[in-house]
Image 1 (spheres, rainbow, N blue to C red):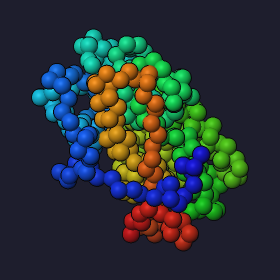
Image 2 (image 1 turned 45 degrees about the vertical axis):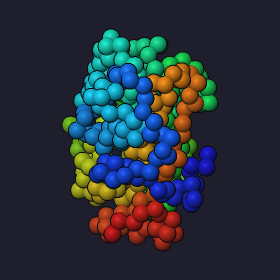
Image 3 (image 1 turned 180 degrees about the vertical axis):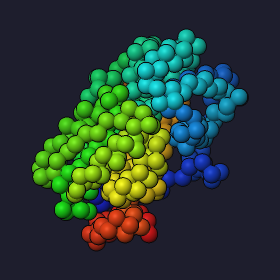
Image 4 (image 1 turned 135 degrees about the vertical axis):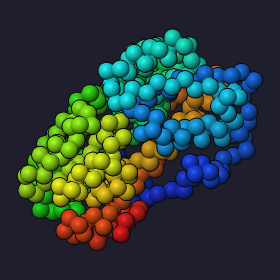
Length: 335
């Protein structure tokens, strides 16, 4: 897939959100007001509202730009699992019993819980790994059923992270991967990462993390082996603890490649999609469903914004000399 190549496909494109009050340049046709009905949107959050505030605000921004105002023509019903994946089915069932017009969620665990809870209420998944591989939809072009959303090539992205960290540190012989056993997409992702690691002569070691309290010990254990690095896989638990994971990795002198909030915190590198853009674009799918389009007729959309970030401040702390070619191809360099 072309998402793996650096260059034009990976360059940051103009993307303006309203998270800090800035204006979004949407076409005037997109701002038409919906009908006078007040729609109820159920939101099934896998972690907490505080931890997913930026993502959820991106969704609300998109809806607002399409003419939906909370308390006016839409009402949100929230359920947040606080990282307890075992509670997702219960909360999904509660939202279904409220007979919401659309059920919105994120990630593979959230999507699976929503899909198991209803076969009739439309479901929009803001960001999911590969809905075909995990059995959520029949195909990206023709999802069928009651679920649609956006996907971001998680397996390919994580395999590329292995390649990039090896490029940054040629002497690397061992890559540890933070894995949440409660996320059904992770075994598929690990297979792709293993193929890349094997081709590069790197040992790939999964490290299970089931909750926040597991993170520090897991990272400290990885750091006991020489010539090691850490790769993060997107997961609500990992995303909501991005800063903590990056901090522990730096504390243990462990190079980490993950997603943007980790690079901003202190990870060596980031390669991945613009997740806020995925939540933002989900509003369009919600709008189409509320206006009568069945989710079965809405193709799963793909991530289009990818970025590479190199944190030279962290590289200096770790004693890593990042190749100039890698720095030159980065969308952002933190110094």
